[in-house]
Amino acid sequence: MALSLHACILLLKEHHLLKSSAVQSDLDTDMSGIAYDSRKVSGPTLFFCKGGHFRPIYLSMAKDNGATTYVAEKPYVEGNGMNALIVVNITKAMAILAAAFYDFPQDDLFVIAFTGTKGKTTSAYFARAILEQAHPKHVALFSTIDTIVGPNPDQRFKSDLTTPESVDLFRNMRTAVDNGMTHLVMEVSSQAYLRNRVFGLTYDVGFFLNITPDHIGPNEHPNFANYLHNKLQLLVNSRKVVINAETEHFNEVYAAAMTTTYPDSIYLFASAAFKPAGDVPIDFRFDSKTLSTTRSQFQLVPVTDKAAALNVSGQYNLKLIGDFNESNATAAIIGAGLAGVDGAKAMPGIENVTIPGRMEHLTVPGHGVVYVDYAHNYGGMKALLHFLEVEYHDPRMHVVVGSPGDKGVSRRPGFAKVLSEYATTAYLTTDDPGFEDPAKIAAEIDAGIDHTKVAVHTVLDRREAITAAISNSGPDDVVIVAAKGADPYQKVRGVNTPWPTDMVVVKEVAAELAGK
Image 1: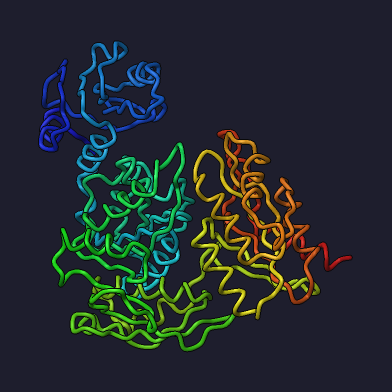
Image 2: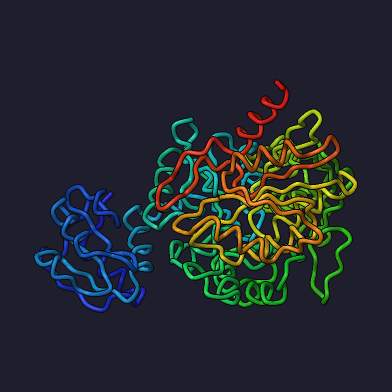
């Protein structure tokens, strides 16, 4: 991979990003590397001075390591002797130049993208499983949990971000293409648009699953309007659009899609009983037939001619339980249909999908059933607890939950609200506190809980909180360990501290109780 200085200047001008340039070498000079981390510079590299806390010493280090050109929003003395490209917006410039450096790998992939406050990961895994049924070992995945860039085990690794920085994103795409991948299923977070990580990227199919307040706080979105605006950008940048008609703020979502997409390329889906407020054409309906704590079965019914043309109607079985997962599965099936995969492949493809940290459960003799789930905001938690309340006939529910520090501040009152609505007992604990005091985070959640309905215990050691919740539950109770899912670490003061995962701890507690 390489990119010339001349090409950089032309691309930045084309996107109206270049303010000025200071060229010290021949315009045809190629840069064989691209980086925003000075530690990853080696040889003639295009280096980005990125971030609100960027320190000029990083540019000096990059220069010492061989960087020949830097891109920044202002000139730096430390870059004297280097080519300097001064831009209007550093993150947009980084996305545009990263895509070019890696030779626009998105053009060689059929890209399906999901956004939504909840359900992105599950829908993405469902979609990949269906596509894999039709195209074995040719489907890449960029998700909150895993990044898969090839068919071999060593080409699968844990993700750091739901949607990585643009340089990493396009590098992973290029790797996937080079490994023979033909399709990509990816999650797109609101932060991806807020930070311009996917600037300039167009998706073949874009999904809007739902929206409820989340990721609102000092280090994230300033308010809900900003959060919604960034979510809607996925629709604006998709060739075909699929929308859950039951989402909150449907009118704004549908209007955004209609503004940039032909009506024939917009598909709406909803449950069989849902009645839209206006006269909108629901293309697919899904009707639950069997729903239990072990499996789910539903019928997917096309309503319009364009829906029928996808040939994905029929009865589907899921191993991943929860009525909300029927909605996620419907989205994935439609997406696969738009990629040319019919129901004959979709049915076996989706049937046995399981996802680490999603609806994992274990029966503990004498202590009921324990569920581990990634539900990490009001919407996700409400869907989970409501399902369990119905399926277990209004059981006593013991919920272990915390909220991350430095971000997602809006989750804290949301957790308080949903705990007041469903929980019998709440164990407030630590979950990626970052640079905040976990006791303070727990206190903020506790302040909003209705203590006349919920017994609250603050147990900051997460293992102790899980142990207490299971030990104090009865044989007909349900314990929910929420929010972390299969995360293998706790983020504490900038350090990823190893964590065995919630389900591993649950199994250890169950073994200890069995041995007593």
